[in-house]
Length: 153
Image (cartoon, rainbow, N blue to C red; front, side):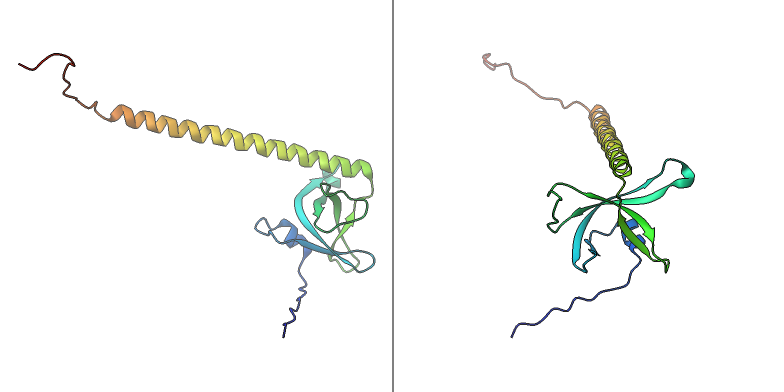
């Protein structure tokens, strides 16, 4: 007899989940028809034209097939609050804002890549310097060599 697995739904603050850097679990949202859609979190981006108007956006990649969304595309959501003060996500419908959020994401990604390359170069340089320094401290080994071709007397 096959056991039924019960799916336990927990009420958690969505913002806590989105901002948890350790969280690798998919984000499950409900569409307007009540269908569950699963997303992979790509990024959380604060964005606004002025500091006073900054909002929090998240970029999510659908794990389920969604009509009109290609497999390699992601969606920009605005983090908002409902009437009860709960965090909710709304698809960003302003195309200019969505593009600007993606641009900021790409800028942050490029910056992180450059930082990673710099750190790798610095680490490699430190390792090389340590090896050179260690090699310089070791005494040269003395070898008793015989000249080839000369007979021993």
